[in-house]
Image (cartoon, rainbow, N blue to C red; front, side, top):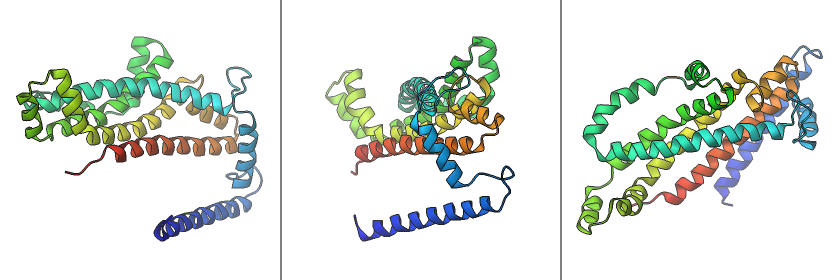
Length: 259
């Protein structure tokens, strides 16, 4: 580890320690049950919840591990299906400037719409809360990957495509050996943005649909006034988000190249 990195780690740990101490001091000035629980109380709850994270005592009493697994399962279904469609549409739009200009106004209209705004329509048409939540994830994941893929494909040097034409490569060979590798950094950047949006959206959607999931867990614990559980769940949500982003960031570094 370099000296600069050691300094960054030390400063980050110092900031974290100062925050925890300030949090504990603030919590200690409030009467019991009148303020936000301190880190010691949250740590005790976390230890208890992590001791048996996969228990199942009924619809409203499941371990934190089961709740996170339910959320990650919905995330995987919505995110992967949206990513596949976004990449296919993005490649098509990136290779056809005329089609891109024709479709772009509709994309610009739909892109700013909050994914949760689609929930009532999905619930009305599908009449299944679990599938509606997956479709919310789909909508939140679609646009960043679509836009980045179209941009990445449109930015490919024409020389690459001309060489593929001279070699008379089939469309599938051209896609796999030229287009996708050249646009990969932009595609992964879109996937990275999309996974963050999807993780934010699934937590909010689960607060609405109930059942299982970390979002519903947070809402249910709030209704029970179990603030230590709420704070621990917030920290768990943040940690999962960091891990998802770090995985795609590592993939982006592996795919990055310089000409």
